[in-house]
Image (cartoon, rainbow, N blue to C red; front, top):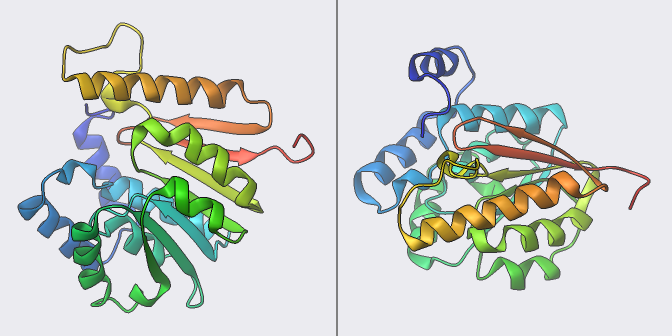
Length: 222
């Protein structure tokens, strides 16, 4: 679902700071050769995340869901030279592809891939992280959120992707699609409701691309 008129979105993209040609190469290759290319974040979302990273002067990032490495590299380009991104995924094939692309970028050295389940890896990570980007398997979104909130630095932000799920989360908007999509719609709704009700979190849900939930800890209430 196109949340914003495409002409307006294209205009916004044209006037925004965008990822490098190295990122464009990942996007072009993925769309032409990799199944599930729709999982890529778009240029508008990448620009917005870059703005957030620069605004909080982020140095350390955790990403859940690497895919072909586009989002990790767009974030690396907005970190200082000594910045670090840990990106977690279970798909070895796409992670190898991502690493090949990162190796061609002068920002690739900032990225470290962790292969495995986020639920297993996150508890072993050392805090703090200034930014967490959650874009992995939808059924575990709430668990990912609960595990990563304690890892945030005081200025830290969590961004959760795909929270509008093509508009399906809005009551009455359900399609008669696949069982998987229907289940994921329910996972998204449960997570959105959880964030809205959780008094220790400050959340803002934005209709950028497929929906982005921005989350911060409310200090003093933890």
